[in-house]
Image (cartoon, rainbow, N blue to C red; front, side, top):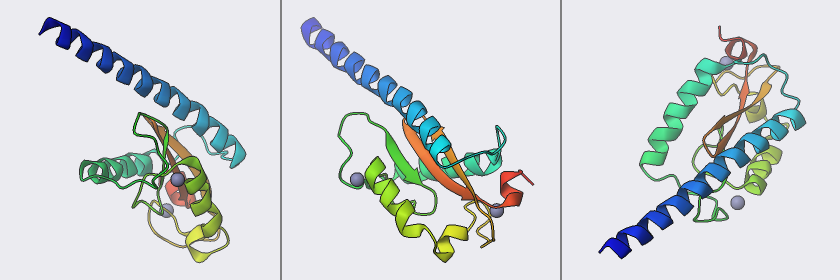
Length: 144
Ligand SMILES: [Zn+2]
Ligand SMILES: [Zn+2]
């Protein structure tokens, strides 16, 4: 009995270590992606929208968010694209969504208010092991 419990604890610790590593990875990945996307927004820009998106992500995750099929079963960095929120994706699949959207009308739709505008500010947010890609209009980016 005590042995079984001890083994369970070991598994739990390994999982926690992997989860912590995934969160650290997500921080690095998000910072790099933000740099590459030329995210120049002020710190805290679009915070209200990000908070709302996180609520949506939580709700979707609660009911079992499908994945692209490439994410490992162990804790790893997942990508969630705000304008294609039906699944959690690996980096390659997230970039494929990005590439498919580029130049389309959807590319100019704000993930905050849903308006199609001339200029969209690309944004990257990070929550735990999840990197969130989003695009915001001037108003939402400024938190107006
Ligand atoms: Zn994938
Ligand atoms: Zn907006």
